[in-house]
Length: 130
Image 1 (cartoon, rainbow, N blue to C red):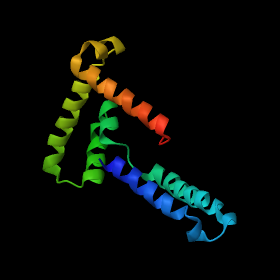
Image 2: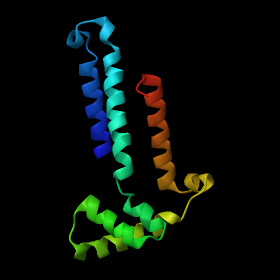
Image 3: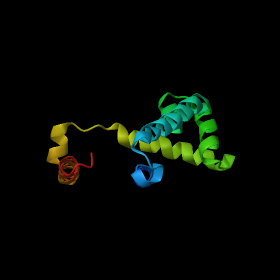
Image 4: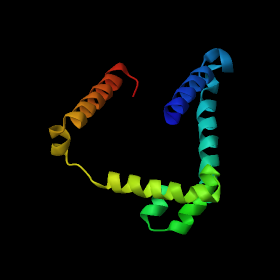
């Protein structure tokens, strides 16, 4: 949900910034890419200081770092961290069972989801969205 909201927000802001009436001159088009580059560099500079996700740390069997990561990202009390760790482990076990492409087409639910995804991808490609 949040990713889709951010993508839509970025699309609207980009469309507003790209209006010729905003910058006033055709020669200033490159400012949009400069702004994008500045944002990218800020994120890349901050990334090494961000902790890994709790799910990744749990998959590496690093429970103590996963606790710190949960504390950082979710800012929850210590008594909730254990239940969150158990929930992450349960989700990892459930998602560990992988399906082959043939299994996706045999199961009615996953087949429907795959067909919807394929139709959406084709629609996006042929309408010029992506």
